[in-house]
Amino acid sequence: MEFCVMKFGGSSLVTGELRQLVAQRIIAKVESGCDPVVVVSAMGRAGDAYATDSLMDLLRSVNPSPSPQNLDLLLSCGEVISAVVLAETLNQAGYRAQALTGWQAGIVTDQSFGNARIVSIDPETVIQASAQKIIPIVAGFQGQTSSGKVTTLGRGGSDITAVAIAAALDCQHVEIYTDVDGVKTADPRLIPDAPTIAALTYGEVIELAHLGAKVVHPRAVEIAMEAGIELKILSTDQAGPGTTIASGVSGKKDRPKITDRVVTGIAHLTRRAHVKISGLADFNQSELTLKLFDLLAQNKISIDLIYLSPQLIAFIIDDEKAESVKEVLADLGLNITVEKGYAKVSVVGAGMHGVPGVMARVVRSLEQANVPIFQTTDSHANISCLVREEDLIAAVRALFAEFELSKEG
Image (cartoon, rainbow, N blue to C red; front, side):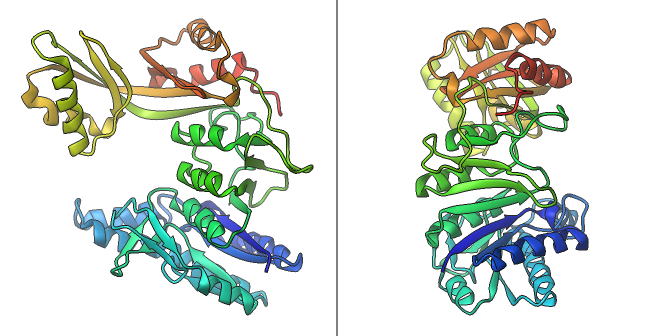
């Protein structure tokens, strides 16, 4: 069998017309001699009847703090609905298809409700369906513990399902279909003419995803990298080559070239709160820092852009956690300020490693755009700056121009 794994996002399934386009994509694979294995997300986005956010809002209208186990069971229904509806769309078109839940497809997870990790996959049911020329339509984002409890894999988890199934099937390619024609050099909502990037390394996409780009889940890319699976980001309703995600070394003549330019793309995260802690002179800093970070971890408050000095500790959090931080750290006797209204903007590129002057260009371009920087951090593949949320568009446009990201390639 020559398996081809195809994943379709919720925005590709929300209307009957779009589902017909999806069916045509799948049928084209069948006609080409491939055995498609299809993974689907819940139909639509927040506000649509069967979208994950809509199901979550429904349960939280009953109980603002529902049981994680009950919440996962409900949320798994969105993808099951998509799988059944798409399977019947294909059956109606004369191509046999069978909807499968994540656990029917053999996915076993740990018990971390809401953010479970896949422990193992037994793809035998998928293989048997394909052997009978039945197209398996797998509900993404979900699995089951060894004791039979339904779990979900976290936001964007259908990408993880698709790549994990591909690895279990020893399939070397996964196509991810969405409402854009690939990964852009910047968010097209802020830069409408941002071009599509033809090829990216796994590392670049992981950085972009962690830093706010939402085209593909970073864990899915990590699994693909470990298994040597090539990813393709494509549009459901637009023709085009999309974005190829692979290693930096191309072994295929038809694979787009991975460029070596310093910055490949820009990502951003909004709704950040800036936490600053001063009044540290009377404390043992190493003990205080350890206690502070332990308290935050115990209360599931994730922090980023961390700055430590004898006079100041600073970091950023999701602004929904602003009041929680004050409550959690109240007993430490520190001077704590928490200010909302910030955004994190990042430039990403594997080519910046070891190249002098990249930070200078970032700072200069933001200064010329009159965008104040409140904190920075960097790694081998990214530089991130904390800016006011009201300055985000100006910051993205300044960096987009500075690193010439309007050019394709």
